[in-house]
Length: 248
Image 1 (cartoon, rainbow, N blue to C red):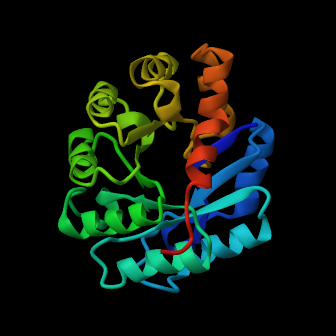
Image 2: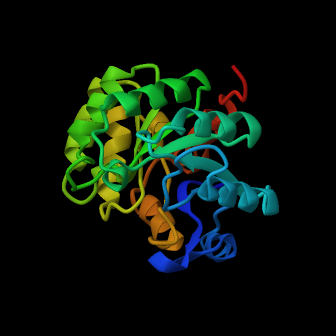
């Protein structure tokens, strides 16, 4: 079983984004990926946002393959209401935050308020992390430190140049997990397992921007113990998703 914990579907012609769910599912099939957590490239601003409805429609069409997360601009007036609708009404399973996209500090009060709400649902909070200002591991780690009740996933394990900083933050903060998408270093996946434990490392592709086939092979090349590889590929994300509640 392989579950991709971070993938995208979206169609916005004006931005050149034409990644319908069928395109992702084709790539999943090629890679042997059974299910994928999906989110858009856009940030929702409130309930019934077109981006959220797009994810919900995709999940409804392919319920055996796709799992929805909502992506939100925390600074929007309707951010909390958008999260409530996604989790309670649409049965989505998590929250995606991209501070570079909405231009806000990861530890800003609006973001922390949204993280606290997600934590009430036991819903994971997936942060874009990387080499850009507003997405540096130290900044996202501060959000995790200020909201210890939230399960914070650092996507991309810090990008090309900040993997060590992510692992240091995760060593210090037990509410931080990491995903394997987009980093080019199989050995760093093995180091993450050795440093923070296999239970806190999630397979992810960030597809279709990154090819799921290559992302799966990267985990294979890490040469993990079979029991650890099983946790990374599916066990950990399954556990997180099963803990999400859909009411308060």
